[in-house]
Image (cartoon, rainbow over all chains, first blue to last red; front, side, top):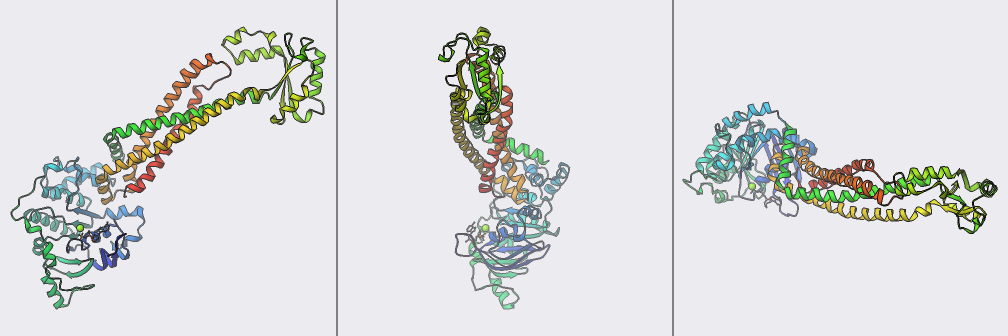
Length: 269
Length: 304
Ligand SMILES: Nc1ncnc2c1ncn2[C@@H]1O[C@H](COP(=O)(O)OP(=O)(O)O)[C@@H](O)[C@H]1O
Ligand SMILES: [Mg+2]
């Protein structure tokens, strides 16, 4: 579904590459965590999948197509096969829940009839039935993220990209969001989620790809966040590590701050 | 669905920065008034040229009873003098310069005079006797009028040889200068309008970057993302153009036809139908101006 072949990305006016010779193969229906410290290149990798940017070297294939070769007027069609969710939700403050979700369909020209049918279904799926008329500021952070997920999923994309979707949420709320993402994953939607939320990664035991300074240092099926697992993988010698793995002990844990607000209730914004 | 979406986006955008929209309307209005005024002045020049140049280039005026020129001492031109002048015009010397000759009798002159100044005080006070008989000479090359002028200098019975273009030249000069001035102002104002439209669209794109960002991510087409901004600029400019057409119409209707025609009845003036000739040009200029300014701005400041 998503294939990176020796992909490097160096931003203009920057010496150090944000990604360096990344190889990655994600099958249809897989759930992959992308972990690593801040600045390790997680967002950059997602941006390349979305073709918000193009790789400096190597090639990125999405749904069998080389995204760099796609002419610019075909890029929107590529993006219609993907949904994206961000840490900061990115809802339109003036539109209510229903309209925020409907917006994604309106702008790709779906009929009103289709919208009237699909939007309530999706809101029901994400657990927001009955809150259609609320404005974003009348919702908790977790609920806002559910709206964002509904908007990303309403067109039933084959791929869902999530860039630290639980980064602004407390652990309890995060767990709810993760349940929702798992449910979406079970509809054979491929999910690629960047995070440095230790608890979440450890709880789900999904495939984990770890980046460090733009290099993939670990690619482990059913892994945890802790880098202790890295050593275990190295010993088992079944990791397609590309580039210097290095011990790098505890580096991921340093930035895994998501559990730092124990007991915090949902933040009302 | 998308039409409704576009309409609501455009209206929303215009409402959101009303002050900027109003200033775009006003600046395009003023700049297009200058463009339109320049165009109408040139139409006026052309109308006068058509009227005068086509009819005649050189008039050989024959003496009337009260002509005071030295060649008219014998009073009104005699038939033999008149025939002599015509013979000269058809002589081998002048023939290469002369395309055609037409005789205008006093009655012809009077009729034309009445038509030209219909409804004015001059027309009412003029009598047939005051007007000259003349030969209206069309030249093969209008710039060679000097040949005819000099040829008839001192010929008995010829009061004056007049190159009509020379009489009109001061008017044309005034009108051409006025056109140049209007054109200069128009140019400056159009530059201002283009920059203002660019700035407005840039601000508009900035204030809606969240929306356009989401549109991009969910796969809205480039066109749909850009079109609201483009149409916003074009719509404001077209409103400005409509105001300019209205202002020019009022100026011609009440200023020229309602006042100048009476106050300065020297020749025919442009009328409101010429305003309708200029109107589509102004709208086209507005669309082109706003379109170009928008597209260049959007390509720089709006990611799609
Ligand atoms: N638009 C950009 N221009 C220049 N450098 C950037 C840009 N975006 C990210 N970077 C750099 O690329 C590296 C990776 O960033 P990013 O992919 O955002 O990491 P992460 O999401 O893992 O925190 C960082 O060093 C960052 O400074
Ligand atoms: Mg990031």
